[in-house]
Image (cartoon, rainbow, N blue to C red; front, side):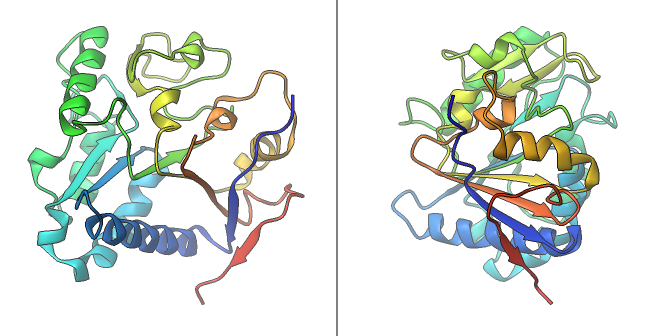
Length: 258
């Protein structure tokens, strides 16, 4: 099996420089979309270290556009843990505390799970909310998805060798046996990830170097979940710091904001 096209790889000297450039890219993408025929911007966020990175950089980057522009943002989450929003593992809860308190996107434009439902019903409910928000799309088409990648190659809550990697019908799937706690989660599926107009993977730290080399360079018969994200008509980008990129031999662009 041929290695997938790795997309555009950008390497930054530090996570701080990466975060600043990521925030600028989000704001630029939003401006482009708001000026287009749809006049809205649909953004999908992942959790983990991205929460603090975006909380640190995005409010100031988005401020010049004003609240009228932010009112036309639609915000969803690429996966979510089935825990109360007040729980330390809740992706939405963390964004609500650290980012949305300083980024005035209307609550009605933020699409969340209902954590009080059983996991199967929570997935169906989230899928219904997405379909309502993306009326006219046969499958939700996000303007920008920001994804992370785990040291095992997972992205969203799509884990190596898991049956959900074969899911082609559902846009949102429940998972009750996540190898990473908490076990019950709700995740976007590969068809939604690959329908996006732009996908950006963000990875920092030396602990990601070996798995990134496998994802971006190796020809594996059984590709890792992150390697299966190949937007059908959209753009794929990788934002890495030097530590995460240290084993790569494929071409990449070196960036510095200093």
